[in-house]
Length: 178
Image (cartoon, rainbow, N blue to C red; front, side):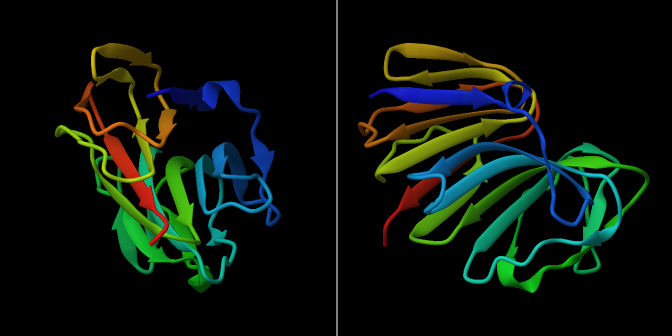
């Protein structure tokens, strides 16, 4: 089982079309221009609408800053990711200055996003782990250190124990085509 990883610190930020923030794309899988799954870290710099992505399911969690409101619902550091229809393009209102968010978009297949503070036995064709503060990913008899704001993923994982040890927020991402 071979894992890949990328840290947000190694990705150049790209400005949003609406000039409301920036994105550091960690992964567009399986292809950059025809993705089923896209994972990024965004910086929301001002109030305004999110871009509309019809047919896309989104998950968003605040990972730094004072938080924001989406759909009149407050999102703060420590909250589980909010799942919503990407076609809705919600209005974002910053609580007190810019914030950083973990953003996952899925448009084909079935994605599960859940806390990484339990053992995962992969049973899907794609599995990932995102960590906010970093830690150690152990899979089988191997250990992979992970820096803050890092995504690790594996295609065609072997059904073996995957354990994450670290402080702060971290999430397992499991994707299947059905």
